[in-house]
Image 1: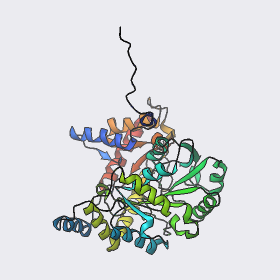
Image 2: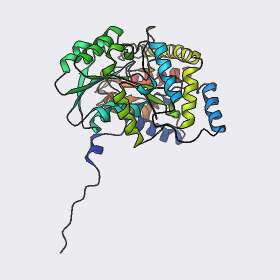
Image 3: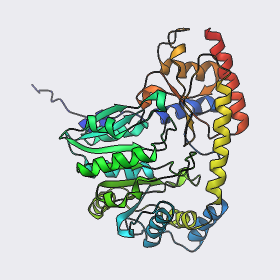
Image 4: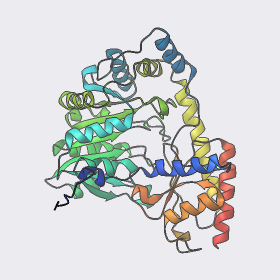
Length: 398
């Protein structure tokens, strides 16, 4: 007689995370598109612009010159110098190339930073609403997420006082994403400095997700890396994806204390190794070349934002804060929940997709239950058509 032995298929840590909600929405939308359905797609956060010509040419030249082999794990010296020089020029920071690691996308910079800093039981303070991956990456590392609710009536403002109230002896890090995905909110310069100094005083790391830092519409573009006297506890996590319309290139970086950067590089050496060599050359061209494209992109996003907000004014019951950056709007849809069989923001997003053929992401993915997120990184025609479809659909709910 044999005794059955129970076997565990998956490691416990994979059960602590979920599939990215934005990727799930994208998959559903792609399926409908493959069936010939015309969609107004506000789902994935991806620039509608093409990568600028000079960046593409640099990658092509690298390939033609056979610059296609392995490089230093942390990136070639030239790309790391380009990162720190660009940041110093724009924000007055004082990082050196050995305080920089170049990564396969900004998400990997975040993942590696959390993995090397957060241990089981450590707490990480996370403002709400938050980008979908923050919570899961923290939990994957065994950390505990401590949520701090942003003040929606004040454009989801987060202050040092709010952060301080959440600090405990187990607090290891604070994550700030400014401008924010999903709300487009910008942490005011005075709030940002106060939070950074509070963290530094308490020996807590501030992980600054500055993926959208150049898409700041307030006229005062700031980086947490500017507070150089606090750099011992600052980790700037950056990306070229949104700034230069390079999402598929997977080009990101981290700037921080040498020991942390060294630990991240060590982890990277046992996972992805270096970012693709030709992507590094293209990134140098992006960082050191003309920044006119960034100015042009930002100007068009402001026009698109204003167009979306004007359209929302024609939908009774829909309210929305004014995004100060990035390329998202995060309208409150609480007036529609409970109508037409809609029980949640997720239900509403599903109905908008199936009945109005409008792609949005439900707020539950970002930590709130009464919102949907729309990315307006689309053409102006898509904005017009998408808002019309939403208006018509919401009218059926009464």
